[in-house]
Length: 188
Image 1 (cartoon, one colour):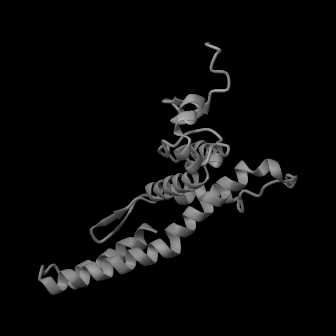
Image 2 (image 1 turned 90 degrees about the vertical axis):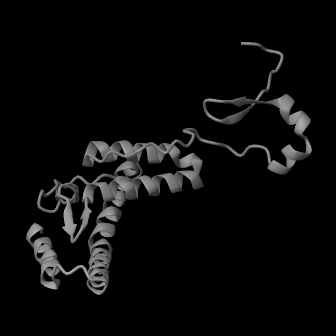
Image 3 (image 1 turned 180 degrees about the horizontal axis):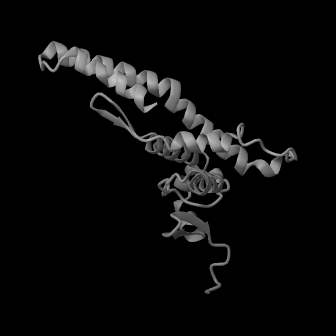
């Protein structure tokens, strides 16, 4: 693979080292096109394969396990690990770190899906931990609340009845949520 990218980078040498505006635009155009092709045909497929494997592993308790012994030549886990260990590749003046690209993809995906459905935050946290254990991928924490949220009071209800809401709910600064104060007369 490294030899392939060395051959691609020879294009820059063939185009010459002239820094005219036309040559610079041609080089940038070729670089961007090669990057888009590499991203579309390799990086995105790798990201989706890692995400799918993490999902299947996290949700494996929902399926009957397959009792057949695994063939190391066809083991998806080993292939993905080897693909993630590929050293950073260079396309002209752009350096692409495959592992970091996958980490950023998973961080973005997990954050966006957690923001849409906070009740799934535990699943994505588990998938993040599994990514570290299985593929040595270090993902940033989403900084979204880690709890399952049930349907709380409606915003219009709160706005119309703000006085009763203030009396009935306490604000938890750590979790950044409002909690129903069922027994206001009990002090703990």
